[in-house]
Length: 225
Ligand code: URA
Image 1 (cartoon, helix red, strand yellow):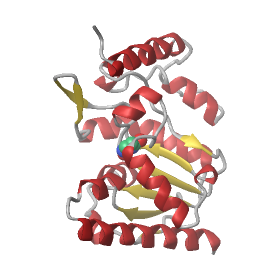
Image 2 (image 1 turned 60 degrees about the vertical axis):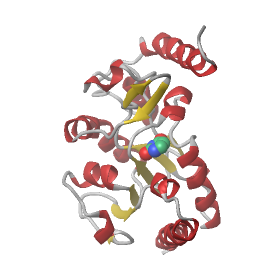
Image 3 (image 1 turned 90 degrees about the vertical axis):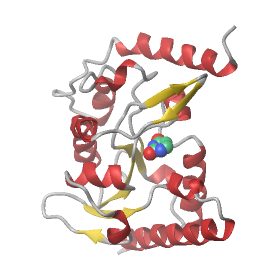
Image 4 (image 1 turned 30 degrees about the vertical axis):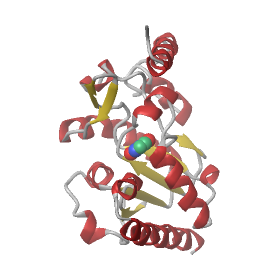
């Protein structure tokens, strides 16, 4: 008897496989962000598509001035087909609102567009994407950024930072800083919201939450400039 979760999962996968036929998987000829999204449904650039339910492409305002880049979809995002809708997304939305940023005016995406996990019983445990997977998926991220053409891109954590700069970035050192680039949007570095969720000690968690809020407020100010 399938559990509630696997029923959801099977239904989402069936929907995704039906719509995947329209995705070419390369996106070379995509003339718009929507065409790019369609093409990404059939992505086979790395093996992660095999076990994931579907491609989780970015979403939000196509002309957003700020793009947030996470790591990869989690379990909930994989089933929903939308980025940042699970626990990390809820935390992110709440702090974003506190910082005075309207999520609907932003574009939110991930460095890697398929959920990578290890099955453990009935659960699917998040597994970090490797450098090859990040590199393969950069194809989509670079094109998304090209279409949206934001003023600033926010790297949420180390995987996003690596995807954006093409090399390892020490997040603790770079956090809160903006790197201006000649050939693309400025990049701002901060932590990943799921880092906040992992902090057990309430006082430490609340202090880190404040720091994250400060980062988001400074992004809002950067946009106002
Ligand atoms: N974590 C991410 O990095 N991205 C999501 O979409 C969800 C959780």
